[in-house]
Length: 71
Image (cartoon, rainbow, N blue to C red; front, side):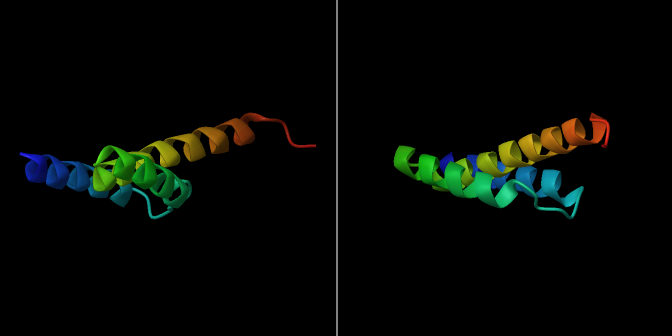
């Protein structure tokens, strides 16, 4: 069961990341998520989830910067 869940999570992460080629936020999130997941016994799932969260926050930051008027 764990193996199926791991494969499904990785497949979703790959599909989600293949939409854009940029890895902004993904590497840092994957490292933090992988370490946290490893501590809980789920390193791969933590890395995949961390990557997705890192990408989300990077995109959120980019949108906020684009909406600010330039000086």
